[in-house]
Structure formats: structure tokens, C-alpha cells
Image (cartoon, rainbow, N blue to C red; front, side, top):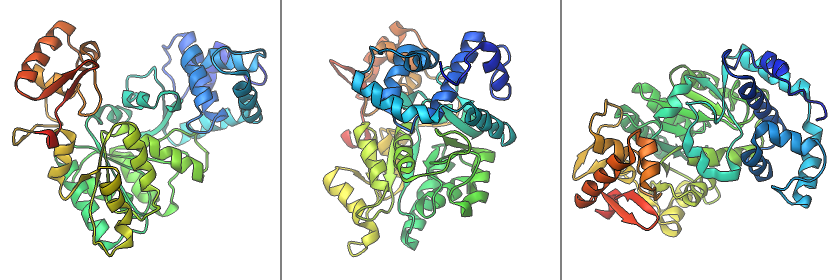
Length: 396
């Protein structure tokens, strides 16, 4: 393969600061190949996603740059992909990224790691190759459930107030708050979550080692100190319009619900809402004054997308299915009830079979099937040919 050495020795030396020393050679090579792919592609490249899913990161690189045809994509797709990937095949760029990651304490998370958020797999071929993370990577396992709070950069005083109220109450009760680190609603949501000691996650469109906008450097550092700052593009990457739009799909995918607090008619937050709807995630919107252009997009979501009308944190909890029979369920406390474990493994929007539920709950399939039957009698879950799901708050 041209330009990149995928030998175990080279991979192990390059990844010395972001890999486990006891990893097998094959795992180290695969991890290094994943870093290479993160340089070759722009976020959401489905051709690369299909190749890596079929052959693994290292195998896909060998197939693509070793010449010849590749069965997993058409000849036209492969030819076009090679033209856009080849100019980026730069070993020096890979080395620079890993050096920056070491200096700025940025971790590399791949699908092989236990901290990888499985909900991103709902993006299919458009899922990220890897994640670059500042902060405690294990926090990525605490995002079920979680809520994305997004909205206008040029937020009004009303929008800021509502975002802070929602984020503070939700984060304070144990529901992680996800947003994009931008001015306006994003910043208000992050600050409020931090103020109550809650978990908040910022997904960036540029490299995880630097804040964008620069005026939020202090805020992003605070998020990294107590939560996590995440990017799918390598360290050193600049944010672009395309990367902002693709970043929005990660915000929607990593969260169980998206709430748009305030958005104009053409707000970028509607892009995040569109991804949430496409992924069958719960979608909510906060109504505003009918005379306010800053709320025109929120009203559009309520009217055209059937978004839940959000007027309080309690509305968000109901949307997430955290309110059952008039009482709230603990979110972050210790779980000892097996029925609760099964409910935690279910979704209000996605149908899951008992084997998948058992895997997510860490239980035996026969135990899960028995508990699903009991929960069905209680009206907490529903069954269809495609599997089981939770009954959401508005269905009760």
C-alpha cells in the first residue's frame, strides 16, 4: 500500500500514547488503520464506512490502495473515492495528529473499546470511524438515557433562560446533557449542567484539542474537566460548514432525545432535529412567542415534524420514558431490580429482540423473556413482530 506502513512495529510505535501496551499486534494495526481512515475521509463518508464494516480498517486500506476492484462498492464509487482519498494519504499528518493528541491529553476511542457508544452504530455506514475525546472516556457509557439541548447561536434572553432551566434540572437529576459547544443555546445548556455538577458532553466540528468558537475556550475546558469533549475528526482539523452539519448527526445519534429550544426558520438546529427524526429518536421543541422569528423553526418542528411540546424538564423525562405511572425512576443511582435493567435496555422508539435486550442488560435471554412478559402485563412495554419497545410517556 502506498505511503502508509501498517506493520505492527510501526503501528505500535505511532500509537504509544493512545493505545494499551498489552494489545495484540492485530488489534494495534487495526487501531492505527482506523486513525489513517480518520484522515482520509470527511465525516459521514458511506463508501469508507461500508468498506471498513466489511473488511476492517486495515483490510479496507489494503484493498483500496493495493489496486484492483473491491466487491463491497461499485467500480464508479471506488474510482471516485480513490480520487478524493489519495491526496490525503499522508503519514506525516497521521504522526502530527497523534503528537497533538499526546500533548493535549486527547484519547482515541474505536469500536474495539468498551467506552465506544454503541448508539452511534444506528448511523450505519455513516457512523464515525473513531472518536477523539478529551476528558473521562468512560462517561460515554453513561449516556443512556441522555438529551441533546440545541438551538440558535443568536439566542434571545428567553431562549437562554429556558435552555438553562431545562439543562440544570435534567443534569441535576442525573440525565446527561449533550450539545455542540456553540454560542447561544449550546453554551447556556453546558453552563447550566456544569453549575449543578451534572454530566455534559460537547461534540465539536473541529479537533477535540481546541475550542470553537475560541470565545468558549474556558467553557470547553470546563466540560473536558468534568465531562467529555468529543470529535470524530483528527486533532489539528479545522471546523468547516460540512463538518458542522455532520457533527449534528452525532449529537442526534448519541442522545436518546433532541430538544430544540429556540431556532429560526433556517437554523442549523433543524438539521440536528432532522437527523434525530431520521434515527427514530425522540424529538421535542420549546414553543416561543408567535411573533418571534427566533422561534419560527421550533414552531415548524411542532407543526410539521410532530415534535413533543416541551415546556418543562418533566416533559423531557416523559419523552425519555423516565416517568412511569406518575413516578420518576432513578437515572444514575445503583440498579438492583432486574426489571429495571431490562427497561434500561429497551427504547421507546426502536424495536429490539430479546437477544439484543439480554446483551444490553447483561442478562440471560430466558430471564429477559420472562421479565418482558411481566412488563407487558403491566403495560410498560409493547410487542410487535419486530421485537419489543418501551411505552413512551405520551402513549399512557
